[in-house]
Amino acid sequence: MGVCLRAGTTGAYSSGDREAVLEAQEWYDKNSGNRTHPVGQKRPNVWGLYDMHGNVWEWCADWYGKDYYRNSPVDDPRGPGSGEKRVLRSGSWNESAFFCRAADRAFGTPTARYSGIGLRVTVGAP
Image (cartoon, rainbow, N blue to C red; front, side, top):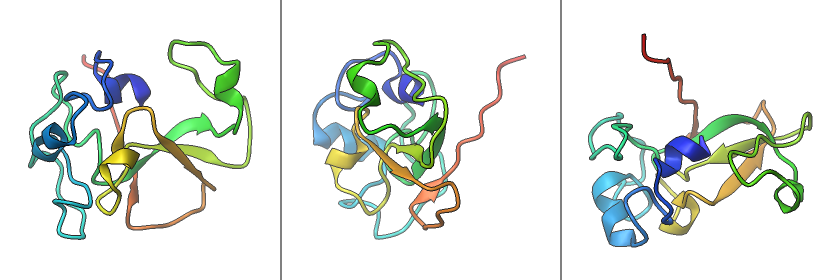
């Protein structure tokens, strides 16, 4: 998720570091109208992926570890091997731009249900 979220960039968002650019690309508290939106209504990131920041927090396969990143690999850390909570990334329709940053992550138990959490299914190219 982190790799796709950044799309090869190093800024706070795949579209840059400024919140103003985020508005053209993603749904968050300032432009969502307090609801989720169908994917693909905003501009895609440079890899052609839509809604990578905002709209809904996305479940990740990574287990959450509070201090994991202090000693993790720099490139694409996978999280601890097990745990009780999974990582959520990308913020949601009711979060500020701060929580939509590529570096931000949250966590939840795998049974959590909330209108601001979703799942991105991806398939490799043939």
